[in-house]
Image (cartoon, rainbow, N blue to C red; front, top):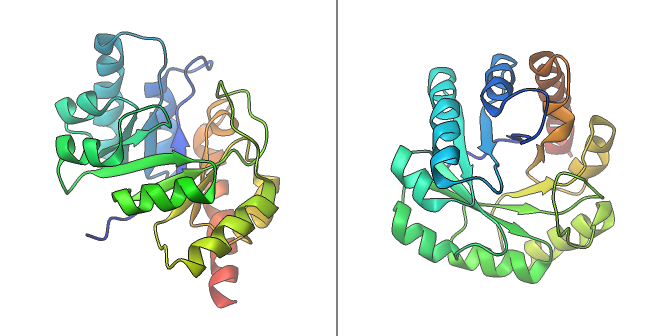
Length: 219
């Protein structure tokens, strides 16, 4: 099944000046179409309550809503899907819970990770980190543009077509270099969430990504 995977994915920031719900409202107002709720060290009840709020915003904005880590919460609230970290359950286990229609993404740091997750049936793969980021603890080795380029070339040689999403400390200045590697899209968190005007910045990012994608497509 061909599931649309956005070229700009927003991951909510837990301890930002704005709540995840407010971040989602402003991001979607700027034209954003993909939100991943990422909350750590909270109870299932607390995460579920925040997820329901963000899901309502995404439904009204016709945006995709993904829950980070918590497969059963995604199932319970009927989210669009889940993103699995490296220490979460497998893609196949999540698929057994969520069924064939829901989107399942997963985190990778190496080509071997990408190959395994693709074979398990991940709908997209978050590959990173691109560079150092304070958003995530226990950071894997940074890849940089050369790392992405190498992994993308290995994917092509192995006929792996699962969309690859670059993640980890990415800013607008990095986008030309990142998209030149051949990745499908990017995921940003703190850069968007900490902006005074999230909606306006989202619109600018979408414009920039659209231009870059058009140039890469013509190549």
